Amino acid sequence: MADEAHSLAVFIDFENLALGYERDGQNGSAIAGRRRRKPAGNTGMLDVNAILERLVEKGKVIAKRAYADWGRFEKYRVIMHDSGIVMMEIPERGKTGKNHADIQLCVDAMDMCYSKEHVDTFVIVSGDSDFTPLVSKLKENGKNVIGLGMKDSTSDLLAASCDEFIYYEDLGTGAAAAPKVTAQAVPKAKRPAIQLLVETIQGLQRENKDVMYSSLVKDTMKRKNPAFTESSYGYRTFSALLEEAEKLGFIGLKTDPRSGTYVVTGFAEGK
Image (cartoon, rainbow, N blue to C red):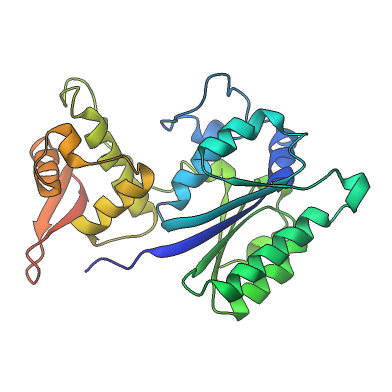
């Protein structure tokens, strides 16, 4: 059956990420083609939703904390709140010492490592080499560690220490091309469900999920959009949604001989 979903805790060194983004010339070209739910006026801002959407393809994100002097990043407050990220307030460096945010992030991550055994994956969003000892300690305790940062401001030492490192600029890459969900191909009322299905399969392929049981696909869709229910789009069951997507030529399906459930084989050829 489907792989059991990982439980992720995300710790964001927001100052490092945001300043790296600004130094790199606000280079969001690699993810510009992806569909985004950006707030109005978000031009030129770090795409927090792109980060979270990539991470939910890996498992259930159960904790999200970002560390910064939020008075310096006032324009991000609404986005962080809407994304369910807890903003940990760190006073300006002159009052507390330059490493205060780093220390607090490390303390909180280790506390969760010891107190929350069900959390098996830690995501450190930063390119700062100072977090390398934290990564090593988490791995010593049997945790999987994913790093995420900007290409030009990420330490090679940190990237090499993680089990996996994702560059912000590559968030929209690394997966097979997805078929276009057009008005001609899909009725308007059902288009959002098919679009979410296509994006989910693309993300699972990026995570090297060769066997995509229907339960895995649906769980990932729910993580991407917690409000999703197939009945909202006129489907009696999730299997009915998959069957229509196959009929429309978007995906391939087969039936698992042991369980009798559907398995998504990928995108249909020629679509």
